Length: 370
Ligand code: AN7
Image (cartoon, rainbow, N blue to C red; front, side, top):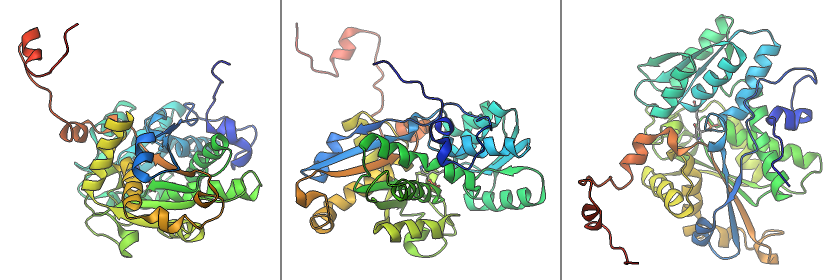
């Protein structure tokens, strides 16, 4: 069996998406990302546990945003728009800029000055978006974008555009298609809270169509310094090194709470130290390089596992642990590690500068002679 052709999420899941059968997709062949087994994480969680990483960093622009952006831009074209606009902590702007370029549309992005990862800035600029760095945070940027797009003919492509979540729900479809079932637990970082909402929509949709027989618990994690949903109030000055989720007033706040409550899951927070530990663990123990915000899902899993959450909450639940079946956990890794080279270098051992000789290398490593 060779490689199967993959034409993107609209081609794969058109019948589940609000799009006319004849509308051409603006696509970069996004989706179909691998569900990578994570045995080292599973060992940390406990016996009889399977952990999978849904590595969304392998999308065309390096994040899950491409699933939503193919839909938002396709619908914008269908509706006759010739320009798109978004506020972004980085990944949305990279994706919007790429799909706008693909569609021959213009693109305006508003980012918080000094608080987006270098790779994401490079992408937005390289794809030809008009980039504004505002003296404010993401929430300020989104306020401006809402106002401009309400008053002028330019399509808003943040996740308050409903087509974004429609596209993003296909991540849940892919997980179900590959596992033949839902996982027991779905761990996911939470920023503007669109993605947790979209995954929950996707799982519920497959369930209501009888394609899966149960639903997972949705386990969302915010960064401690940017955890409005956990704290129950807007955070005026969100702070975290995971700049992708440095958001104090999430647009899909209520929908994320509904996903949590309907699924019997949680929305909790992890510290920057816990995020960095998971970021390093994934790179060094699993060989998977995600960006810091993405590691919040695994940081949450490790935190809950160490607190005994699964032995307390899962032992008696149906169809899992107790019956001898393995507990299945999926963690979404939302963005690629290459997006944020500065944090990667900061949290890794530095290169050793040496003269260009064999002896200089051998001074620093012990190798067995042939
Ligand atoms: C890597 O790009 O909000 O909870 O403007 O880039 O759906 O917002 C990015 C968010 C997680 C949070 N992981 O997802 C933006 C933006 C990564 C991200 C999130 C983001 P949501």
